[in-house]
Length: 567
Image (cartoon, rainbow, N blue to C red):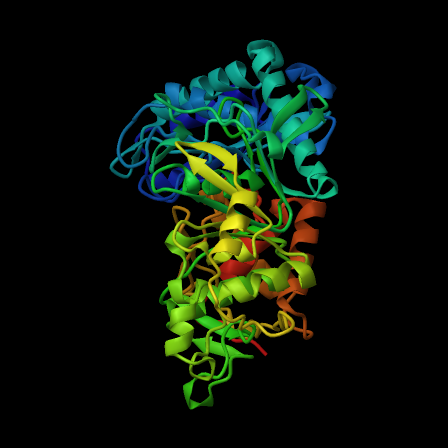
């Protein structure tokens, strides 16, 4: 293996050469304390940056094995090292020429602790993946600047961040133990009959819509109502107390701007772990919870929405309903049925983003428009059947309709960001002020019908390229010649997840579609492959910018592919 000195010599020799001559440096190099691997060299200074890796032997890195003895601990430690490397890279990298010259960067990071491909470790070595903008002026190589960047800056970053003695052991331990405790609470939710837990002292509000860090000023720490308070005896931090949200039907009510949606947002991202001091590190949610909303204009392919919508004009079928331009009610019905198809166990709904005519049809409207003239069966008449017949709980923010008091198991009122349990008061009001509305939901919820996707309808090609994927933040991906709009899929929290989802769709088509497999069966197989082999299984070469995703968001991307056809 060539040495770092030989790499420096090569870079100096390439000074002022054509940019394509950088291809000569692809390969592995011995830097004494670590190995540098250059997997891919960019074609010009304005192209996607070059892909680099470093590997440090554990005999030198010397991280105590107790820090990565379980999956929770390992993911937390890998996340910590990724953030340390990223911060050091931002400090040391500087512009050296045109385009992306001088860049040293990692995957985009947020407040969530995710299983990413940026960093790996085991008892033998640590591997970190990152990108480098190789220096150039115009299309001429800046060889000496490249030698400084690769042979001086990168070793400095490695030295600062990938050796245990260079880091703060207290902060490492805090992150590892926080994540392990959150995972412990999540594992305990089903046997405690809970769908979510919000710790006392949690800070739920964020700084802004574009800054996901905790609100600094005037944030009110969360405090559970005594009647809903539960306690978990965690492996590291001992007893953690807070509000347990029980299985069944739970309403979150209250006046405008009192924290209803803020609480629901914290719960919906509680399917992921968060950094220590995020404020939501012990807001923990059942991993099978899915946020549901109306989504005007989305395409729907062969979904059985008949539990909610039937008897459409022109005798259009709702057992295999398709449309390129869904209404609010049909989109919300499809979103629920697609989530149930892939085994959602908790539905999270905010009336602010729901279709009103899908949520409720009150007594007066029932009197004016007879049931035989109304194809929509409102959610209020199906919500109990979902729980009793399928074990699917619902957590619903509702500020405008007290009709849901009749079907609720638990009612939580938010007052100035403080929760109060008001179930008995709500039930008393329901008894004293009857709505007189007629139940329209029938005896049972109805069929949940798995669909079989047609593999040929999923085409990631564009022009001469058999696969062309481009991710735009967390809400849109260019998939071949199509744009998949995921702006209403609110539990994708990191661009690395969407990049992995797009890649997994291609992998699913190539490896697991066909043979009459249903969407749930295909997703099961894809996730089993990733569980066994890691995210590298879905890519042609090692990439450092992917993050693990859930089955629900993979299904959501597939369902929003406008070319999708199903059997």
